[in-house]
Length: 363
Image 1: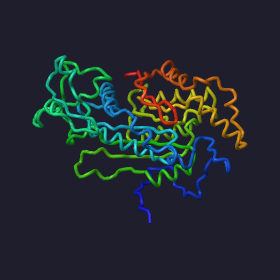
Image 2: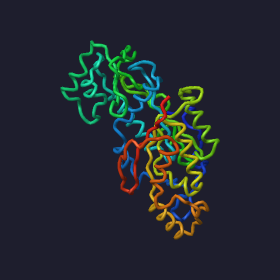
Image 3: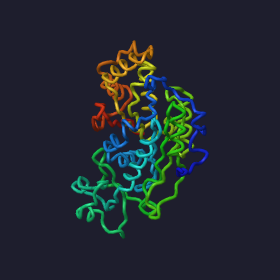
Image 4: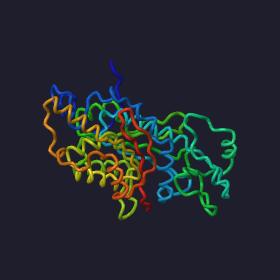
């Protein structure tokens, strides 16, 4: 008998049994025309990609929100939110949330006295997740009786100014990230039903040590290229507690995952449809982690569908982003969407580039 997964009414919009759920698959062909593979993690395990995500991702989010004035005070508390587009059965979504939680636990208190230039270059703000801090790092943090602040990710942002005043530490011991909230969307309702059963979680109990952020995962059935689904996603973000940042800027996700989905959007919606979605994503996030399909993936898909007698989508025949499609996507995000290529993280065993981009728009 399988263990029952705790669920609440607001964690999943599906609520259907597997028998009631509709799926999109081509019988006998082995093809999932929208990338909605039902055994996806058997041939592309979560651990193939998880180690490549930036170790300082949560620190970058925290630093950026501090710079934007959204944390409220030095060492204040905030949430980390992410959107996973094409989440399948949610295995990677859940493990990515766990990764962010581990990172949040390793944001390191830094001695709060005013820094001179040499000190600002030596600050350590994120412990290596796989190692304990060195004696040098421990001494830099000072003893627990001192007032503390948190200087995060100075390599990717501005170093702390000498004149900066350090405010009071967070009220809860060591907590800088209160919650990690994931909103995950897929157009296959059967996959979403399975994701809800396996991974939906709204407000789990804190660990006894009280220093672990809470984890929330919400799953939405819908097509992210459609306005109605985009509205549902943003509504769920606001319902989770995210607030508009200004009259001009609505609430944004901290991170959007576009993992092996760009080709499927491209072949069904064409160059313009892909550009529209990239533009929408860029307007609603601080950073993007994208796993790009190269043109070779398109060629492999075309051969497989032809062998199966599956008709090719009409937009595929008129694409102008072709042999250099992965580079064209990155150029569009940088030149048209105001994003900066922060790092090329890895190339997966499927020869797909995994890239981290961050928004250049600061409020």
